[in-house]
Amino acid sequence: MSCAFKISVEEICEDNNLYLIEDCAQAHGSEYEGTKVEGFGIAGCFSFYATKNMTAGEGGMITTNSDEIAKVCRLLRSHGEGQKYQHQMLGYNHRMTYIQAAIGVVQLKKLGDFNEARINNAEYFDEHLKVSGLTLPYKKGG
Image (tube, rainbow, N blue to C red; front, top):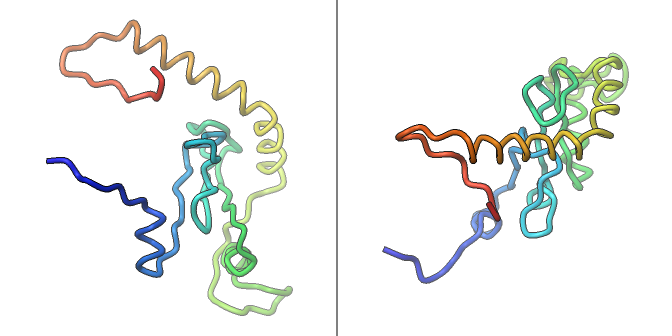
């Protein structure tokens, strides 16, 4: 059965008054139809765990163009403090260390090379890994 029309996630969110928050955990540097990931919704969430496209050891990042969302995220990451010892809401300790941030900055400069290596590795496996019943991930243009 085929569908005669195409509806996007953005349209579903808009029609239902929902925020679109993108899971970009393994999509650092990725694009869809010319738009960078984290550019479709109100926010994008990236992970810097050791197995991701780029790492800082642990931690992550939220990107947004919304001042309101950014303010809430800043409060949540730092015990709900807007100013030192003045808590505006329940929050957590989700701050990265300066060392993790420094590692992340250097990793970001190398992201293009990291992504190219991952693509080359995937192409190698596509060509050489032949296991009955194994379906390899789809790669656009490949």
